[in-house]
Image (cartoon, rainbow, N blue to C red; front, side):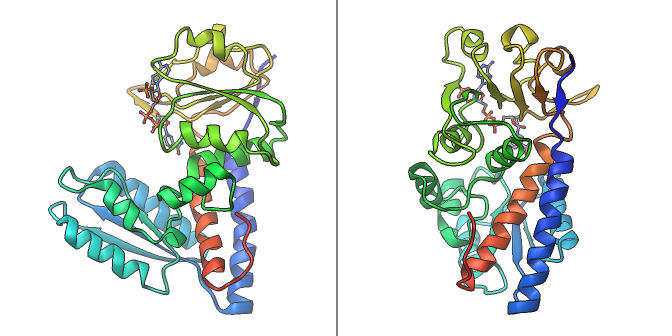
Length: 292
Ligand code: NAP
């Protein structure tokens, strides 16, 4: 039987509707408008598209948005000075530095310069550390989006065998950490696979929930998936034939219980969770109780 589709496009709409209500209430009760700024260094075409999408999402939710598009030859010192100014700007609750940065700039130094209370990407080591020890913090947007997809689709993580393929700092490591936390949407037993893993299929075949973030089409084929598994495909690969994930969708969907499509699965959740984090940051700045 073909798998149920876990549609991030629909779940992200639900979350945006909830955020719209929260944003309207913040305006009405406290005169607060959550503000996000993007920092784009240079003219990378894909980065311009991502920054534009974030600006559009802010407009849709009636949030304040600001763009700082600066030349590719901006010095590291000038970029750090800009971050410092944004850290001290009360209209701005979230700062997003679009990666990758040009090679002459130390990306870690720039990301670490962002005030952790405005780090809505969840990449600052203070937030990463809090995530690992299970304290409230800004969770990185893509893995946070995956967690919401699982929770809102009614997928039980408690006691589940989860296998994550990929160990990047932005997807694999954080989602593995989130899923081992002792709380709702966690309490799973997690295995993380990477290119050093021997016999990946022996792990993936055990998974009740299989999360794939490898960055290569057809990393996971039907023979690597347990009958009735839930499969979350994080991959985004642009082929001549169109956009595909890391999972061989056509064959795996016949074996899985539920699967995320590409596009329309994990993708739309990332920006939505960025908006969610920005709204929480605005509440935090005003001393209002937040849910992180
Ligand atoms: P990344 O930094 O390139 O990391 C890929 C990870 O997968 C690495 O840990 C690598 O192992 C592992 N890997 C690669 N091939 C493998 C294989 N055949 N078997 C086992 N492990 C393998 O990628 P990323 O940033 O995590 O992104 C992964 C994918 O998700 C990409 O397609 C990206 O475009 C997509 N993505 C989507 C969103 C979204 O919003 N939908 C957001 C972020 C990323 P090693 O560490 O050993 O090299």
